[in-house]
Image 1: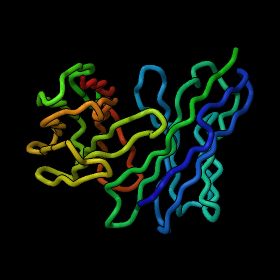
Image 2: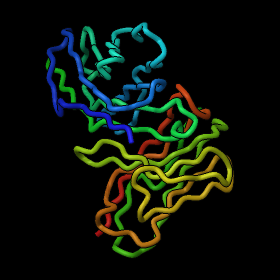
Image 3: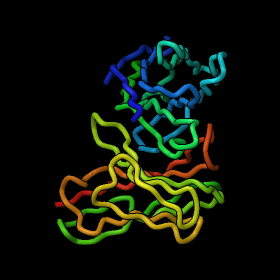
Length: 117
Length: 113
């Protein structure tokens, strides 16, 4: 089974600054999808960004961007101009693109992001 | 509004008392799944369903049952809950496979005494 590792249980960033959350994954598959989800104190899971493994270009969504390193199996999330509303738990997730495994999602253990005013 | 609705949101029960957590989506999604969230472990998949009457186990299915008799509903059943099933549960749905994004319910906090 695939594994997703988030090695930073908790991080802090000053408002308006930039922070990078790390995620690595272990897989033998060549085609898959990667996601970052945000979970604020309300507990609602919200998609932040997604990346298709076959795309070399890193995904970007406004202040959120990823650094996808396929060979290194790394998928970090960069948050620019951090805002108080970015404070949340962030989960990295993996979904296979293969016929036999695409029904399964694998999540990391999460990184709690604190934003200081 | 497109959404996934779970009920109950909070529940305290006792060991062995059967309970059902309901999940309903109004987006005509084919794929539905259940997860449990525990501190330090992230979310782990319990069961998933690709369509009506098609269900399969995720990574932590022991102690749980599901059914998919209608496309919109995917209830999670705990036949004989135990304290190790105390957790935060999420239902989610999406269009089929691939990069399609999961839409999550608001979560159900379950405590088994």
